[in-house]
Image (cartoon, rainbow, N blue to C red):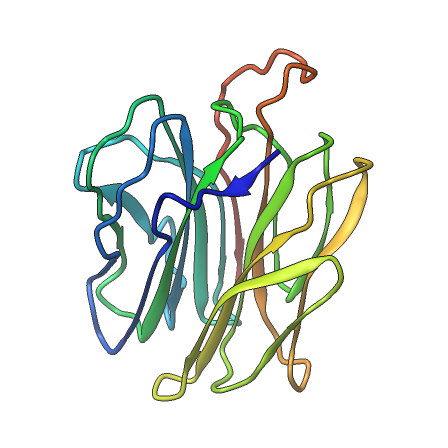
Length: 228
């Protein structure tokens, strides 16, 4: 069963103005953890655009990203498996120099597989239909709109993790997670921004570590959608 690890700190950083990167506070993840970094860059849509690193020099796997010129935003979800406890870590999202604000949300998960090749999707909307593959999986996602100070309302069974309302740079974002998968198949996740404003969303199915899963290839996948 995939859970947010209670022994480690989830690190969230929100920035505004022309900054080159966002860095989390220091936190201490335990061994056999999966880290999921969700990063948003507002008022920029170049690609790949966002690179995830940490203070221990681990190699992160960029799993899914979405970039939209129309929505003037970029988002990425990356993962890192930790066999051993690394001690204190800080995670950085390196962004383009030309951006208005951003959000970095790092989730520390227990009960996840070391091999992550679950379903992923990137779309120009605030809600997406994704086809889950494995009982017990959870879908992590992020939705962004180029409209300032609008509330995000998650749909069932989506739970909001963190939100960012950037009034100075006219953008809003929300990270979210689904309930655990009971029956794999197509499900609509995400939500709506007040006023039904245009948006982009990236979502990734995180696979559980269970003996009943088939042998996984361990090949990470990178998917990207660029809308002109």
